[in-house]
Length: 295
Image (cartoon, rainbow, N blue to C red):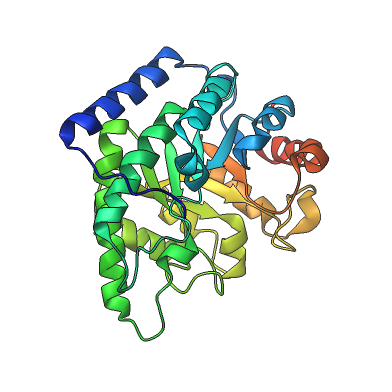
């Protein structure tokens, strides 16, 4: 189980959680990332790695939203205190819906509502700005199920999530996932089409360099989708490892050139196989070189 479906107790409960989250973030505003960097480099890692992520010099932790949602109240309060006492925030979250069903005959909008009302306020209290929706297990289309119906269910869920995210000033960001990991929304072009169909100001998209390369999609799609892209993930396509050397992939230079061309200034998270303790130094040096960041 990822979460305990706690039924929504009405607008007053949501208003209280929204106000609480906003107060927590306001009280710590301006401390989430160094002000002299155009880009922010983070890492996708569990909450238990927070201290290491801070110690090795990242700008933020991208934590699993499903893990944060599954914490007991005592566990969440302890983690929130740890985050708010540090220089870092959890700017972004991944693993949003993990495996609970968004698509298919078992999908339950009521369960979705209950989960969102727990998950999103907690993300905001930890400094969240972006909640990435990849979660292939929750959106894969079952065999024999109507793809048109699946697409409509996805649109419905994202519109609901966008509405829950709006008062919290969060963005739900669609992540395209390559085959065979996912059987729907595989390219940035598809994610862009979905963003436009959902048509909600709090629903946008990300691009993951690993999936972009796996689908052999032209990186120029980033320029086409630049007004909708709010975040990036990155891994070496060879083995989905943390990147360390500019020569690992021939498209590295093109990718970073496009980011600079569009004037991107948000977060870019390492999202692959690696260890903060073993790989952070080399990977951070790689990103600082490619993005022209100061150490």
